[in-house]
Structure formats: structure tokens, C-alpha cells
Image (cartoon, rainbow, N blue to C red):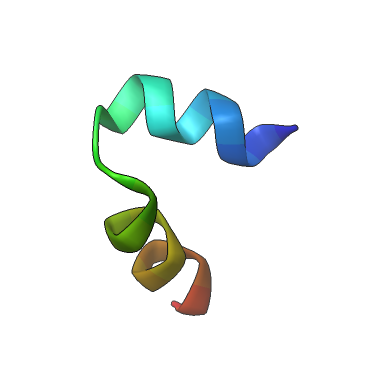
Length: 23
């Protein structure tokens, strides 16, 4: 999923990823 790609590209933890998803 895009989330996994974003996490790898951003290299941020899941918590930060959740915050990015909110935006």
C-alpha cells in the first residue's frame, strides 16, 4: 500500500505516518 511506500520514503515510524495520513 502507499502507506508502506511512504514509510520507506519518509523513513518515519508508524506514529508519524499516522499524523501524515491525517493531513
